Image (tube, rainbow, N blue to C red; front, side, top):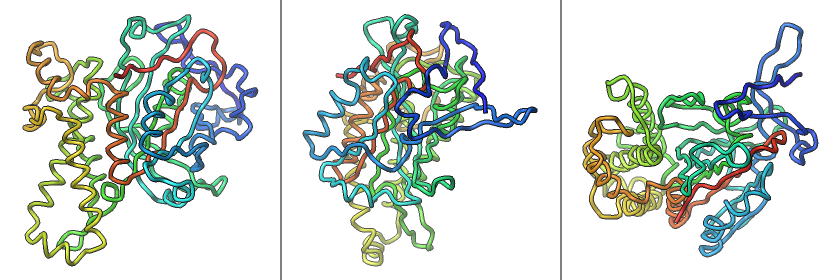
Length: 385
């Protein structure tokens, strides 16, 4: 196989490098490689992923409300300079045990993924990371536990649902597999940015509910549907042909999709012809339904701390990104109505804790400019409060 050199970006930084990759401790457990055969019969590596990162085997389990908050606020993104080139895999739970974690993440299990990336610092600091404030980027996605045929072990399969504008980094609004968005040697972020992918699971949110006609529906499916709608709106700019984005809009618009999904779920429950009879017929789903309703209330308080819905969220008005025609004052007012979703790092922590509060679990996958060694870059953490 061969790993051809990549082309530098506008900042004269290499998206990835294979320099000294064989000396990394991650090399001991191996890499997944993606690519194609060339004419000479060599396999050309287009993307790669550290095998140990995606294994359903946590390096560490953090238990308890205080310990979890400390990890999220201080440890997860702390001391990044020393973490360059390293990964971590940590399970979080307010009452989770290591034994439960090993059995809860079974084959076929699906969960919501919360993605946040940091900045590029060092000798080749990117322009957006040169100021005192660096927001980072936010996205939702889906993680599923699958059985890897090569090793017969369980691993995470990850797809991101990017709510963003098309750009020169090759990011496209829509669904992107981990090997494309993170692992791609030419366009991915694995070697360039520090990343936190938090996988959150809660039976009431990820499980199926049986309706009156025998069909099964999952709240997670509704979230994916709303994310796909929002991504499609970004691709066409709500019919204008294009859209613009500011540092906070990726977070707010992704959470608009989550808010819309929660409203649809609540509406579906309330519109059931006989909800009390349904509860009696499906006692095993009653606890999950109560979990879902409690989660919905907590997330509503998080996403809308002033207790009122943003007009563009409530009515799904054709307002997204930061268009040139935006009224700056009105845009500021809309943002303040959901101010917690301005900061990707803060939003990720708060949404994660909302799931944990209801008895869920979280699995945090952290990478810090992983791959070959590039002395010209350093990881930069996204800001929080």
